[in-house]
Length: 440
Image (cartoon, rainbow, N blue to C red; front, side, top):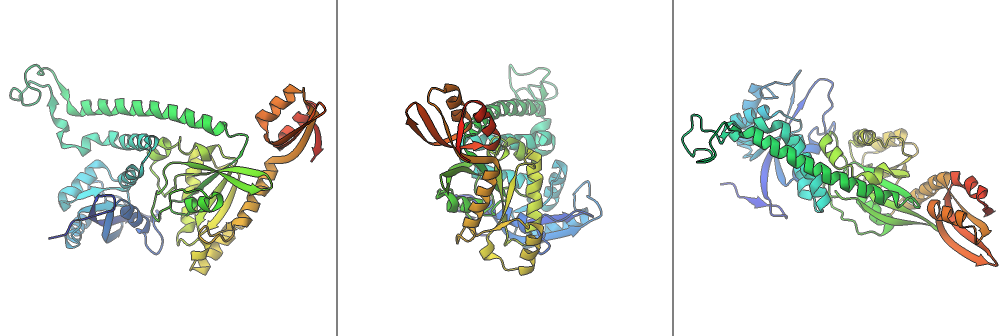
């Protein structure tokens, strides 16, 4: 008898067999060393224990079972041998394919998207994150209602050929409607409500982001588990949650980063990305990602110790393009440099990202160099100067308060000297409003 175990959060641990289908011209979602490496990490994050793996190459997908009937029978025997509770595919399956494989294997089957959605649901802590995850789950589920639930062919309120009370009882009989239509309507109503709530959240988040326009804003982006939260803690002294697991951070955290010399930036940690991140999640988490979308600068954090760093970089760039962030100035950060074991792999990364800063958030290596890179980028956009004007020049003073970041001001004999940081394009406008530049 198999002993039931539980994870730290009380969820019963399930034995999982991982399955991947590699089609012609399609790269596996893991690495060349282990095509199912990422799926294994996702499954572990969801609380499963990986007990087996199965890889198949086919010229095309089988419409009925995705992997073919022969392979499905082979998978059934393999899952029984490994005492697996669940079979997890590294591909997206149709409801009918899931139902067919479950019928053959007598085990629960889930696909990649459902697994990722489950992890996000388990990680969601704030009301905003829960709303975003629920919307993504419903939008994934809605088109699959007919194939997923067995009760959908029942007739609600139908008198027809059923015995009295078999469905709705006295007072509910009539023309009726299929249960699937009721479920679809309920789902659509809930989706509309969630979208309305998230639109309000998005507007609120956008206002928060715009209210920080006096500061230079930086977004941390990168593949999940690349060390973004650890890097943020090292740079700002924040106490952001850190864990060696995928999607440890779902909610954006923003902290002040003192760069020295009176220069301050706002640094935001964002949710990590993976390959084939469900587009429902990207859409629903747009409010959470507003910090990155409207940043002055992005720090693309790369796990330099990963065997598949190049693939992870490509995946992040694809998500950033989907969000419309591809034109935001970016500094590439090769993190975890202290853990690199493959010299040839890091050499290729250095060739591909010649301007990258090499860091170790854990040891502090390269953090000063990273700070200098950020300061250089800030100078491209901002200039620190001292402006002198008459203290009665209310129009200029209001303009400086709105468009600059005032560091200090001194009043003397009807004049005021203001030490501030100002966007470079605004300097001429300040002069036109009667400001005299004391220091360039």
